[in-house]
Length: 122
Image (cartoon, rainbow, N blue to C red; front, side, top):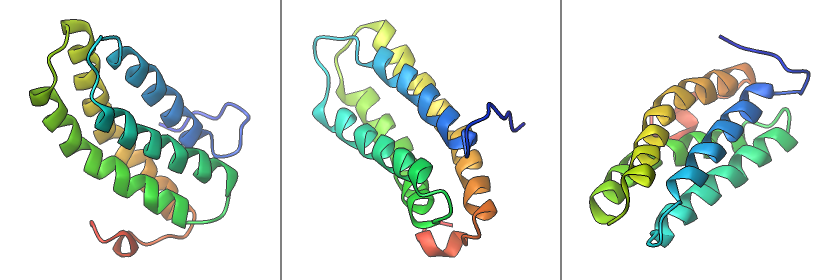
C-alpha cells in the first residue's frame, strides 16, 4: 500500500506526518514527560534526514532503530505518566502505528539498498 503524492520518498513523508499528528495529540496534557518529547524529536529528525538524503541508507537505518526502540519507550511512558485519557489514547495509537511504520521504513531501507543487519536489530 504505497500511495504517491508527488513528493520523492513520500512513504517517509507520510510516516512523519501521521506520527506528528499522533504525537501532538499525545502531548495535550499538563504533565508531559521530557523523554517522550526527546525520543520523538530524534525520530522526526531522522525521518527528515531520510527525506533530505534521498539515496543514503544511514538515515533510514537510524529512523528504523529509533522507531523500534520507541515502542518500548512508549510502553514505559504509558505506565509512568499521570495524564488524561485523551493523551493516553494517542500515546497508545502512536505506539500501535509504530509497528506499521516499522514495516514501511524497512521497505524504504531495502529500496535504498540497505541491509537489516547494518542496524543491529534484525
